[in-house]
Length: 249
Image (cartoon, rainbow, N blue to C red):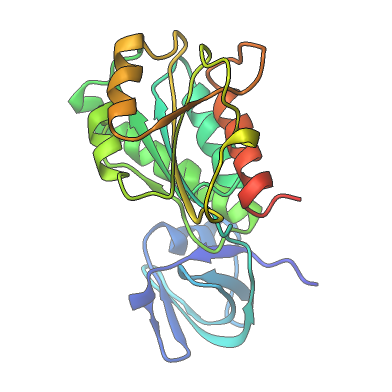
């Protein structure tokens, strides 16, 4: 199978069998990849199809192409996981984003909690958000996702995240002080199709925060006897959820 360069486009950019690429995709095609008329790329547009597109025109501000093949794929997990991750130090949040995309997360929300060391000023948020969305887009291309996971537009409080995810089938908070409940002994009436999960910062969640989270119907869950680092916990949690109810085998 020929490996082609992948591009995500909005549905509005596909009319019939014609595709128009704009923005940064144009410069990437023209100056980085140096593709020309007649070359082919792969286009994905938030669906279960990969479109093979032959380039018709490579202009300075737009690239036009036509769909010459379509392939239905099944790469999105049947379990839609929405991750609420407290801000952590350094570039570790970036690492979590990359790996979460690979593990099939549907959305990621950055959270401010009592023990967060990191503080993001409002003036910094636009640059952070731009960087995070770029990471998610590139990771989606790399691992062959057909949908780009959403990144929340702002850093949210625990209360906001809990309210927004009130209707998820599973609502879990992974807490190092939980001694009894693990994912294996959660009793469910039916296989869950969606899950909201909460992961704390380096210092974990406070007892007050846990009590508040529980009031929103979230269940505390343990990830085992060892204390996991803040950047390790979400990856373990996502892997286990995908193994139990998603598409990891």
